[in-house]
Amino acid sequence: MNPSALTAQPVRPTPAAASRRARWRMWLRPGAMATPIVVLLLVMLVYPVGQLLLLSMHNDAGFTLIEYRRLFASSVYVDVLLITLKISLWTTFFSVLTGYPIAYLISSLTRERKNRLLFWVLLSFWTSFLVRTFAWVVLLGRNGVINQALLSLGLIDEPLSLLYHFSSVIVGMVHALMPLAVLTMLSVMENIDRRLTGAAATLGARPGMVFWKVYFPLSLPGVAAGALMVFVTAIGFFITPTLLGGRHQTMITQLIIDQVMQALNWGFAGAISVLLLAVVLVVFLVYDRLVGLSTMAGGSTAAPRATSGGRWSRALGNAVLSALGHATDALLGVLPKRRARPGHAGSGESLTLRIVVILLLVFLSAPAFLMIPLSFDAGSGLSWPPHGFSLQWYREIVDSPLWMQAITRSMLVGLGAALLSMLIGTPAAFLLVRGGMRGKTAMLAFVLAPIVVPRMIIAVGVFYFFAKIGLVGSSFGLVLAHTTVAVPYVVITMAAVLRHYDTRLDLAAYSMGARPWATLRRVTFPILGAGLMSSFLFAFATSFDELTIALFTSGGLSTTLPKQFWDEITMQISPVIAAVSTCLFVFVAALIWFADRLRRRSLTP
Image (cartoon, rainbow, N blue to C red):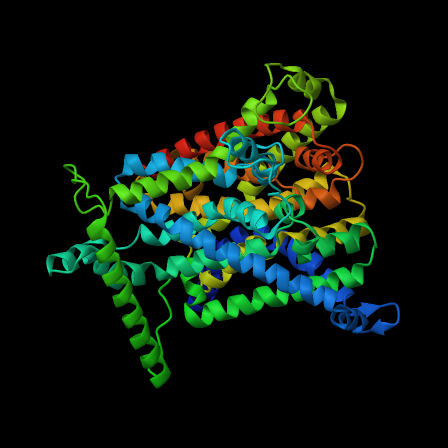
């Protein structure tokens, strides 16, 4: 036999080697898809925040708890924490209470009518916090809309002091965070099987009893998730309390800003951050105990434990729900009834509910629209009603180097952050929806961490990190920081799109001989194009409106637009701010309208 013939025979791998290769490929692809977002969050979230928290327990002398002793030695900081919790809890209560009817009605409507109402919620959700908060300054001011209306009606003799009170802070906070509660609850309500309420009505239950005994318990996971998201966001807020509140409404995030920007006391700022994180962690533990964190990823609620205390609490809950059902039925008996139109029977819609929802949507949208007439005021002050018509304030924006540089920088940083977020977040969404990896819930929790961790803590940690590596004031640093907070929205958007994507199209391409990359390039990505563009626009809007991180890391005279807006508000009040607010509102409205159209197109079967 020819020896060369033996060497020419192909060497077949052993079954063990083939099994190792299969396992390697099984881990290699998910690892490659998860690596970009994991590295980004480790470098830009875990490490900076960890460094900030370490500073609270370590100084030049080594380990120390002096900053924590200082934190609890004075009642001032404890009082500020209690004020923060008070404002956050009331904001959470009213946001969920007023957001529930909106989410309930939207979830019960047909697709076309649902999209019309949802657009106004999304518009309010993405409109700048600065624009909406400043609108309340104009509404509640001594020469504002409310005081002028009351004076013209003869109800008061002199302007009321409506600003810088606890009530003004709550109104502004609820207005800012109600859309978040609506969208969170809506994601659960849309999946409730309406046939259950129909069956209860068929068996003779009245509408009030059907709602409280059948529908409301099914919507509780959404209520709990909405309350959690609103509370965590509210506890890290500083824009609304600073502009609408007084010294008695100081929140804990304002203390962090003072310690970093004025005292340069990183250790004490870290101690306050640890206290803030501890409160958030306790809230999450309570949420996990009552509902289960798996509901945040679309899982089922935690099973109740069969204990005597649990039986008593369920019996008490049933009694309360029954009482609410009887009271609601009694109230519905005296309210005007609206005859159901063809095609809308059993939708859960009523005249009273529609009126309430319309009034709430007006509450969400009207303050931002108020800026439009004020921006064309020919006068020199922000008073209502406007005097004359002029474009001078828009010309002042165009002629100002500060405003134009801020607009240019925000556009460039927003485009860079949106592109990077899409490149990093899209593979992660594919992995979470289509991947066969274990621990998807833990992975999703890690990806959503930038939304859960208070933004102020992220901003201060990134500022300290950038100061060490020389990225403070650089556009590249802003792009990285904005990508960190924008990438979860890309993952959420693309995951929603992928769940509605028909994977049989990919299988058909594979069956005809197409390789994976060719299938992605010629089949998957063209179909997902609208969803990709929608996620890009949402990430851009997140970056374009970001203030907290820019407040610390933008640096120099060349700031971002939200930072320039903030500096202008805190230094002086002029109609230029109304003109900038109008430009921001119109720009974001057009952006969100376009993104919403793309989102609906991507979800259309």
